[in-house]
Image (cartoon, rainbow, N blue to C red; front, top):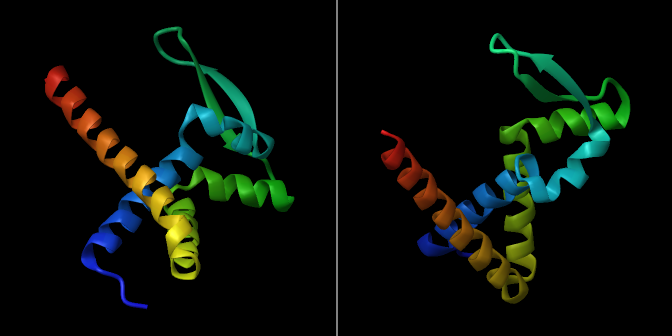
Length: 118
């Protein structure tokens, strides 16, 4: 299967957004929560900070390590989207379009926030 440059860009952006969705976004916290232990720590300013540490050992520990690693989750997201697109392009295309558009919007928002804060 030949993939055009624009398809590669869309799959790349969609993979980026899906990875961030899985690893960082609040909406998918329910996916991550069974694999992490919540630890609280007081910083030098007296503020309580919450850290999510992968559970130790077993399948939950393995999946916790995987979900805490942006690079690891990114490989699996990219693999999933590429295979899905190769097998079922007509169904996958709208998903890629939505995720890649959301990725571009997120990148633009991050750039604007950076400019505003400087």
